Image (cartoon, rainbow, N blue to C red; front, side, top):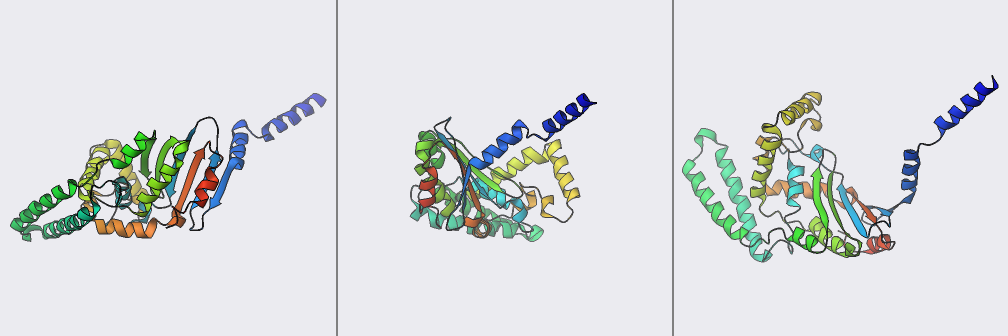
Length: 292
């Protein structure tokens, strides 16, 4: 009887003791330092010393769930456009480029509005508008410094420059040498504060092709899309993150600007940084670059 009691007691102590994974998670949680900047940005810092690198993840609490009816795919489209540069990055002459970009947007909207008339659409007018937009886009494209953001990061030893969009969040990531933190702060604060949506309509076609590959011609993709539409009859979760094709055809730069102003705000941003530099928290918290 005594042996049985001892065995039961030992088994109880074993089962109630924290598992190694739980202990590791608790230890990790205690090592994370949290700061809230004066403009509302949340900063999470995990100091580590096994690699002289820093891994940065910027997560905005916005995604496809925040899209309005008829504009699905807007959050994902915005993610694509965040790699197109700013007023100083990705352009050879922004002063000359800006009016061309506005003209491109106006012409594309005019083309789409004419097409919406269906059988009553003026095909000659559509053809003329297409010729005009091609000519203006050619001029605008000549002023683009292609992939300048990635080229700068790669030249300084960065990797994993990427992003992804989900229903509830959008994440931007990059890994780079820890002594290049200042470079990250300059480049990413610039593209968050001053995005320029150049080559928008060309990228819209890229996203439509992405949808065709992942959904329209993919049985698994079509099944999952149909499942979500059936499971969430009225909730925004029913809409695919990549957007319905009919909606993608009617996304414009003006829609992107409205989405950006409403959802890409400092209080919606959490920055996670894993670094070997003990001075990283102080440097980042005191920098004025993020105060927009």
